[in-house]
Length: 381
Length: 225
Image (cartoon, rainbow over all chains, first blue to last red; front, side, top):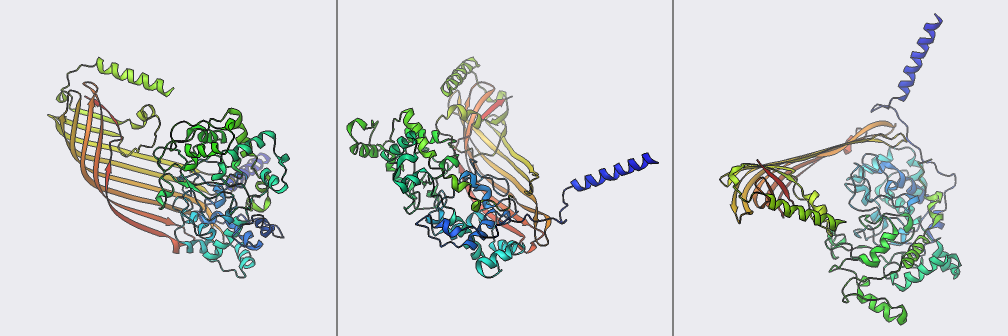
């Protein structure tokens, strides 16, 4: 008798255990993952003001809502990915993949660009197809047929309105619980404009005027960065319009581009892409629009000796610029010129110089930004 | 390293030519089975430019040629199936993809020299494609686990002339490449189904007419038997 009871109990226990392990059947009850937000909002307004040229007047409540939206997978057609899936804080808001994965597990055609100081930018995406402001840009990935797949933005409004935790967030941010496309845009733009990086070694040097923040190698890299005119395309001062000059350039990656970049948008030559920011560049590998370079060393090698001749090659990467550089330097610091003025420049960097440049690029990492809880995923608690 | 491989490949190529019987009579072996070897050969021959398009969907071709003319066929396709069932609260997802490409046509061959010939022909083709994604996710209020389905299904039909060139490596082996000018009519239906928000379920329909010209960037390895 006792044995039967034990066996029956064991069978019932196993059956219950198996039932509890079973996946929810479609249509069954389930629970939302709730965002975890602090009782008092983070000071997004103050964070955004660290970027002097910020074009968005950020409020804490709108940015808080924007943060939840940024990480909410509801913004994709099948609730599979969020903006934050391809823009990961710890990776400088890039995603570490050559090409990002969209809502149907299909790869996007380009490398995910890092989101850095977006509030001061005027051009977005590798091909600069968004140039009318952050609020116009933020829902373009949501509507992209490969990225998040929502064609009708009324669908976004309906989905968000059906989720209970959004009502108080919209009410706090906009004074009303009603979900509208324009509010979603504004909230997302507020959050992105608050994502500011302004605390790397270069900033510390700019603010203090002392190069003691750099190691000797990084300092050598900075001097090279300046003397090689890298600033033609990559502005360094935070006080500038944005970190990058947002220059559009063909950098001689291929003789024939598989992806013609801004040419397909119109108004630019073939193989022309937007110059990316160098902030947190060490975190946002792989590099280039197609993620072809895995390391900064490979990138430096490209600029040193790998530039391919192309009819649209940016002037700053030709011998013409090298001639101009030489004219500004003492004779013993001249770089040798191989070929005609239109040919791609060969910088003839030594191994030590390449190492120094990479060290400087790595010094542009803002560790306070990538660990700031104000930018973290509120669902990932 | 690549140069070494190219060198060995070229050497083997030359030796194999010399090793063959130099009398080529196409009617001796009327069946020709071809295989798209573009990607394989591209690794060795195109050293600095990997951007040439792989613009034919046909992986296998078959020709039945007697007295310099006959029937030609092509077949290609892909099938993908993947699923992901994470246990961290992320929705589970499964995707299926299928494409089928087939063509049939006629062809006439003309000798240019002992080893080279060109051919002209006319093809009719049909293709089918299906892509479907199912995602099990939490949505709506009260929250429920629902299955959202998205995807596309379509087909294309068309016809057009073909012009090709063939190099005979031997009696039984040759390479060919061809250019086509196909007119194609296609229909694609895109669907999105979320039971929680049926008002936004959609069935898009797109019909297209297009004339596509391909350049001969695909190399077929052909066995005659």
